[in-house]
Amino acid sequence: MAEEQAKKNVNELIKQIDDFEKTIQTLEANVKTLRQKLEDNQQKYGPDTSQWPKEAK
Image 1: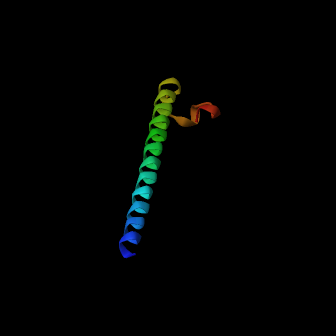
Image 2: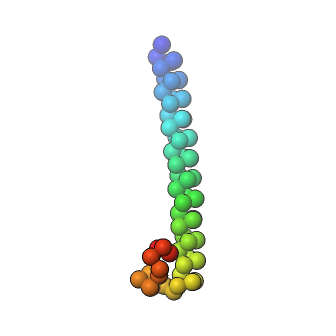
Image 3: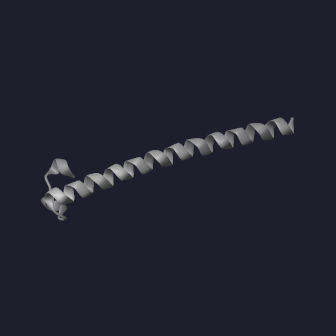
């Protein structure tokens, strides 16, 4: 019984780690997209964000 519970716990932990890893990968992609957008806007509008059009922020 204890061994079965331990298996269940380990499987649940592995699932949680997998979910966490997917979350991190999604966040990484979002950060890359944001960085690229900011770099593109910096090229277009310059480094002063107060001079950027509102929709570019």
